[in-house]
Image (tube, rainbow, N blue to C red):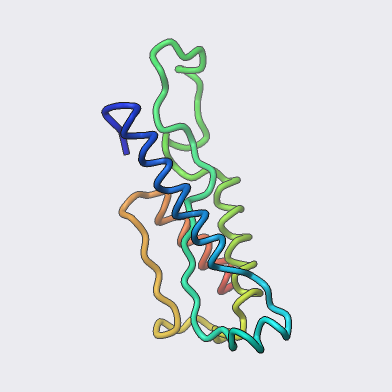
Amino acid sequence: MKFKNRKMLELNLKFFKCIYALLFLLGGTQSDDNHAKYFGDVIFSNVIFRHGDRMPLDLYPNDPNINAKWPFQLAQLSNIGKRQEYKLGHWLRQRYSHLLSSAYKSDEIYVVSTDVDRTIMSAQCCLAGMFEP
């Protein structure tokens, strides 16, 4: 996503920081007995996450590495990013194992991604970590 002016970018970043802070404050991760006693058992989960590490989106005109060979195309997920998402999936499996069957069932999980290669691949790697072959 490209912004036409810096002011719009700053407003967008402030908005997302506020949303993130709100989700952080409201989405406690305690799992002790007192938490369950007061708030009940977890029966549903909604997870939002960003794609993993990626290659640069663009190269600037005077970049000394402009002719360098990148291991992947620009803006694509790197191997580090794939590993990050796989580990996230593994962690989500451990955290929410009581909500999921051991094998993938399409009626238990719903995954949405934007139509960008790196976000689709991030979702796939996360699912691979959750439901290991």
